[in-house]
Length: 472
Image 1: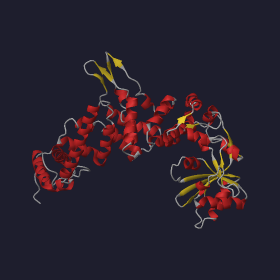
Image 2: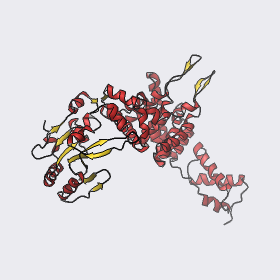
Image 3: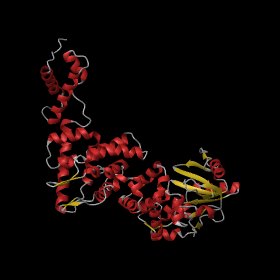
Image 4: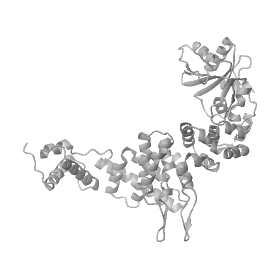
């Protein structure tokens, strides 16, 4: 089969010419070939395998590109990378691999194209297109990957038990590709993932998170998380989620399965935002329910304080997985902590409650509303419509209150310096008391968010505290 149209980009002619100049054979392999056949749009990452030195080929390619791009060399792995326009191209020499039980890092030897295709994770990633001038565009597909693409199947080239045991990251990659491409993992391969799930322990948390993010960024993340749970991988990666699974019953009272509810919420939010951190917030919004679950004869099952407990768990989860403990983590924490606020507010949409919501959420109030709307998973059409209508009222009230009172990213109309000057004070507790009184009065709607009204209240509060107005 010929795929010359796949190689329309001028970089492939440059690579072909460069390979001929240094006497090596070169092939484009992996994701570029797969995505071209699937018609998934322009690929910005290209993997080139050389029968010989990938580093030497990269250097020769750079020489043949007019602006001579810089070649990044990774001697440890025998790879090199350069950028051409907006494309990142990685070069590697064909190799064969062998593994030890303790590590996913293989012992590498030079090999043939067949060796290199044998070491690939899945048949759909083992297809290569020849870049030699005599066979330019010829597809080399030893494992019938093109048939698996047509059948939408994820299958390993060799024995899946060995493939996954050798490099357990491939188990996550199988699930990630199944989620991204809406493919099915072939049954023998799926069984092998379950059999080898404990091997995931040798994979670094950083690499695990890369795959989790890609699953979360897909159109329907629940596909991946259900597979992670079914194969037993989720227990090792996110036990906070598996703890939500199941329905308890006491005295005829049951609660919903919070695991599957969570996945519905994630799928819902995926329809409205590409922000992976907001998707993380959806995934973790109920993790506090497992440790706070209690049964009360009068009211049934309760999860009091699960938002607060969940927000604390977010920090420990991010730390364990070596995820960023910066503003991204704090954002997810805030979303989890506030996840029920708009739901409660929607039952009684008062100005003061909306002001407090906007004050507490700040720039993230819109994200919080998206999360809360995604949290509506009721199958009752009347309830569904009612909840969404209530949230619509909340959104309208947020706009109205914000335009009038400007409490998002609230800055008090009276500064600490002004209070000090008015009462001839040095830094003291009284300044904080007065500022808090002004803030509360604005949020409750007792005074407008204006300097004159705030100044008048400052004088009253100062008098109440026994402070004297400065004569200056």
